[in-house]
Image (cartoon, rainbow, N blue to C red; front, top):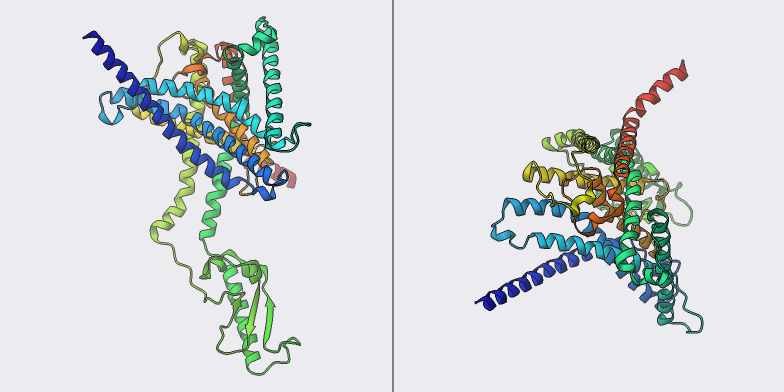
Length: 512
């Protein structure tokens, strides 16, 4: 009887193992397809890349693109790890016996954290360096030209990079923790000793980068939202002045053509008495006029208006387009209301999210000072706190705040003056720039769960190796990080909203 029960238990664990890894595989395939589509959207064609030199580079670029796609998929997984865990834990507690959520359990969430931690290390220290050095490689001297020569060179450079990282990790540990290891022991124990410490340093660097980009991103969110919504609002309103000018020029051209048809041919240019072209000025290419055309767009060659003397032909030819003008469709009542209120609603939503975020950081600072909240690293000694105090509603609010932080950090990252040149452009981004962007996004997304827990945005404790990062046990460092995050955020917001008033005051004093 005991043997049969053991067999059933073993079979049950086996099927749970298969189910978990099937879910991981489907999730990875989904994220991989999204990442590949995104990179293909931004990637420059190989023929136009500066480093592309022939068919051999086609294989090199394709391999590097696959590695970057895997790394970007891991970045997306790391970015969605904390929201998925928060919602998943609430579902597990709220619906423990639901048939539809049988696949969602604690082993699934714990294993997912461990896999993402391992894949982040693999992407950061192996895949992305290999992709970059593979693109830059020329082949080891003495092995001729070819793919394998470039592979050998890339492997040699990556090996030296790993040795360099291990040596730097030993130096840092010896300097700060008074612990020394021989170089041979360091390389042998790289995965168990140095790799978590190196990743701890990388996560600290990512959290420090988020300390700069996120407060700046909060203010940029208001600017980007205002520019986008106001531009759309202005595009939806017809410009009566420009329309009247266009109608006047249209009537003038009709009168000139009528004179030509009535026999005033002396004003025609020599060489072609049946055709006259008038240059179309920039105002005729105004957006409102383009909306009145039945064609979707005008080609660059259609920048002249052609008058034809045959009565059977249309009056005006915009290049090859001979469609008549169509009146603009008036906005309906609800569309006018939506155009009016969407900008204030968007600004109010951003203000509420920003105020809630700042308030959560202030509460976290007070709890750390009083001693009410434990440090994130102490999750290894106590039970995991996975239940939100406000239930499923509080979990959803927490996820919204997490996504808002994430979006603000990305906006602030690519709005920074240093990284503006690295911003990807549609079909104009080189492979080296793609590798750099994937590395940056991977570092920030891997550090984001640590940022969220350090700032007290979430009550979900870090799992796996994320909770064992060395610097999370330093109370002074965690408290200083919260204060340093709060001060620039408040300063940037106050500066953003008071800048127009200050400029007006300075202008008034200057005129007086």
